Structure formats: C-alpha cells, structure tokens
Image (cartoon, rainbow over all chains, first blue to last red; front, top):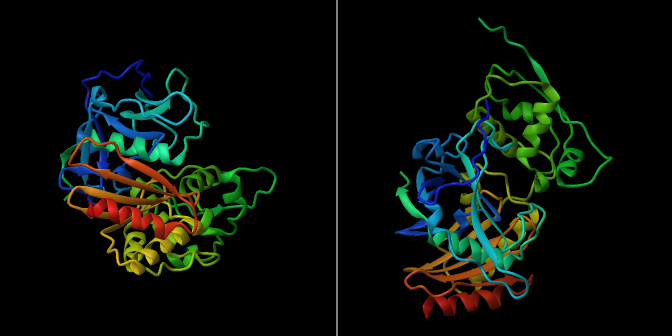
Length: 143
Length: 206
C-alpha cells in the first residue's frame, strides 16, 4: 500500500542519494552528481542510508547526505524572480514505484508554483546544480 | 513450482502522436521472445530489434514493454539493468558511431544510464578534440543520470566542467571550492568550444 504523502519534510531530516566516484574529488561533490530541476533523494524517516544503493546503479557505491535546512539560497537570474530550492515528499513515483522513501529537491521561480513544464535556462540550471552540490556532505565514500 | 511461460515483447511503431516518448516508440520496431521467469534476453535475441539509439529512452521503453506484455513478476531491477545494457550493446541499426576519445569510450562502457544522444556525443567529441588541440589534459569524462556527458578539468579545488546535455547544448561551469566565490556558467555555442576551453584554462591556472 502506498503511504500518504507528508505535507513537509522536517528541516533536520537527512536525505540520501547514491553517488559514483566520478563525481567526488576529495571532499568536493561535483555538480554533475545532481539532476535539476528535480533531484531524487531518499528520506531517512522511511529508509536506511544504504537503501539508495541499488543494482540498477552498480557504479554508485557512495552515499551523499543533505539536510533540508542546508538547501542553498535562491539562484538569481537576469530577468524574473530567482529560483528557490525546496524539498518535497514524493513516495512511490512512476520511475521508482517500490520506493516509498523517495523525495525530491526541486527548484522553482520564487513565489510561483512548481511546474514540470517550466524551462530553466541552461546556465542558470548549471549554477543551481553547483549550489546544491556544494551543500551535500559525503556520508559514505564510494568503494 | 511456477510454470515457465514464454512471452513475446512487441514494440510496435506508433505514428499518430508527437513527443519524445512516442518518437521513441515509432523508431523502435521488431520483437524478441523472453521469459518473465528467466534471465534477460541474449544479445542475439535483441539483435532482431531495430532501435535508434540516439533517441532511446530506456525508462519509456520499459513502460512500453511492460504495457505490451503484461507483468514480469520475476524481473528484478537487476534483470532490467542487464536487459538495458544488452539492448545498448546489441543495437544493430542507426546506433551512434563508436566514441573516438578513449575517456569517452570508457565512460560509455561504465555507464548503466540511458545512452547519450548522437548530438550529445558529437558535441562532447568536439570539446575533447579541441582540448587536445589546445593542450588541455582532461581529468574525467562521465555519463550522467540524465544522459549528459560531463567533461571535467581539475586543478586542486578549481573545476572547469563542460556538460553536454541530452538536447545537444553545452554549458561550461567554472567553480572554485576553495572559497565562497560564486560560480560562473556559460552556454557554449557550437564552434565556440576553443574559446571556452581557453576561458576554463585561464580560470584553472588563475
């Protein structure tokens, strides 16, 4: 049975994502490890950190952690309101239907509702990915 | 004991609608027999399929296969991973040409994600070729989860990253993690690779 979606994710709840060694250099997490405008994580409330390692991603043996309170500040753009980050509960999505710990970090124009159809300029997207990557912490190094 | 049942996966052409998913289905024809209770099909079986790998979206393919043939109760995520990998290895028609740069070939071999499009690969090859011409040694090449090719130059904690995305766009990100300075990002138009490599070199050596 699919669990009900939580209204909000607590600011102190760790979120986890798998990562390959390709995207780590020392303590630095590289922005290529991030997908935006939607980036998948697992919630610690509903799973253990190691659950993000799956056979579908044999190269992603490391785990990175993010606290929602550490989401980056809004990313400015030349015209229009800046893009803000937010975390949203998203259990059992179509692309990962058995994962009830799934959530996403997304970006949207400040003050507007999130839309999957909203196109973000590629250079702004790159800056947003870099901002988010800087705020990830390495939980478990890749093997 | 469960009885084995042979099923046939049909990937029929679809020509009536638009959009990426339908384009993939339209360009994907043929059939292959697999058992939901056995391992993923062999490359020989998959070679019957005709797939344009430049637009292949395996997530969509998986949905198409599932919808067309019913449940696959014994196909775990690892079975799908093997199936997807073999599909890409066995692509017989319209497959993207083999990557020339050894780092890119290695990245493609390691990747279990959807393969980059032909356009993505062409742009990545161009960046790599220009880097060789200007004498910049690339540190890493990888295929991202979103089927982009990331070409990374590293000097301690300074990074110059060319990301060639699935639309065929290239963005250069310059970031110095040794300080809190804002990163810079530039869209790299076709033909402007050399100028942006020089910009990256200047930043990295700065």
